Amino acid sequence: MRRCFGIRTTLAALLLLGCGRIGYELTGDSNHALDGFGGGGAGGVNSANSSGGASGGAGSGGAGGMQSPLAGGAGAGQGGNGGLGSGTCVNPGTYPGGGFFKSDISDVSGMLLNGLAESLAGALRLVPSVQSAGSGYFTTPVSVDSMTSVYAHFSLQIGGGLGAQGGDGLAFVMQTAGPTALGHDGGGLGYHTIGPSIAIQFDTFKNLDQLDPDDNHVALTTNGAITHVAHVTAPFDINDGVRRYVWISFDGSLDLVEVFVSETPTRPSLPLLSHGNFDLSTVLGAVTYVGFAAGTGELTNHHDLLGEAWIATSTYGACR
Image (tube, rainbow, N blue to C red):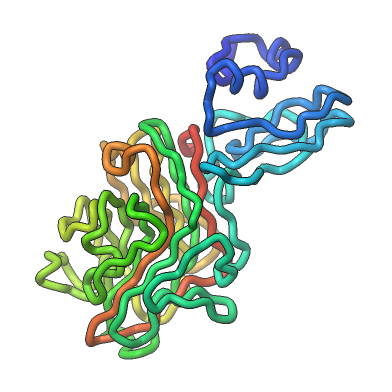
């Protein structure tokens, strides 16, 4: 027996009934709508948030795909795969669908840049090597609740300017103030004072007024405040100019936050930062904007995002 979107049934009955469509209609989940299931064949069931599943079996009319679970978002799922996805968890190491995907983050269509943030060839520079703040947020808000999981991936490069003596850092940010939000420069990392908000920061300067634990840490903060909910000293110099790949998981099924960092495009098996008992919806409410922010003070670095970047939401937790 297996549960599929609120229906208990056998696997054979699931395939006959087309569980994906029926489950969404019965549960009334307004954040997930199936599109494009044609009348030429059953086509199997395909979850846009599954880590994968067998392809094939698509009906002749079943080109479709999954719509994004973002408010007003366009279809982000793969069309016409058919088959039966796992439908129980998300592989957070690859884009699961149902969100914002950029093969090159320097393409800022659908985003709003603030402060000194700018698109360069192959990079989104949040701040240059001058005292400043910058941010970039997707203009379409994201719906969240107590069971929502948020997954993000990007790569960062902080360097130039004064090198390892520079500052101050950048952050992945979810906030409710809107896509024009911009906080303080320097130790404010471009999001300080913005709330309600949640940030994963990569901080490269010890600001005593920000209660920074050290000058080289990864931290979880809330509501644009200086208090660190959780932090860890990075085992590398964050602003050494090396490109690093980041995966962030807010697992709504476990109320668990995890941050993975690597110098290669392969997600490590162990997180650099892990913090439990954290429900993002209690901080953000029902709707949030997602993006990035950075800040520099008198001691400066370039703060860049490079290459592929994505942010997705799901009703499924991470595969473990």
